[in-house]
Image (spheres, rainbow, N blue to C red):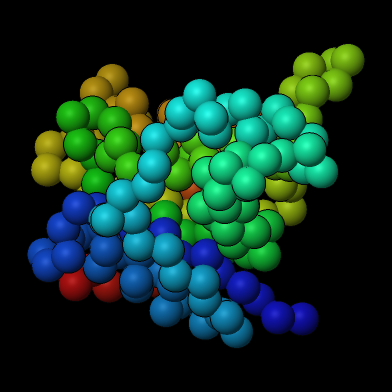
Length: 181
């Protein structure tokens, strides 16, 4: 069975990024058969009225403009669906995730595609995947009152059906048998 890893980096920094270094080390340690690479440093579009209306329009009835505006979202969703494991490298900026990582979550959170509404409430459709989030911060420790990033990611990914979510920082690499760079 082929093991596919989706490797996402959310740091705005190319050079000197601790989260990029950590996420790369994690991906290398997994020795995946295939890696899908998604670097968010150049940004993603934020949701718009046209995007929202397009997601609630049946596929067969969408206009060319709606299909165009959803094309990036479709690609991002397909990457997540193809992955067995997702490794996210993210810094904590101002107590939370970078805006571009929030935009990525907005782009993949699609009713009827990655979650659905049932009579018992929402149900995630991305179960069976695991996520390892490599977190870097210049002063906010994971799990403290100042950390809004990890609870948000755990909730958002769980809403989509991904409940195996682990967070690591530079200090916890040894637990995974890796050395910090």
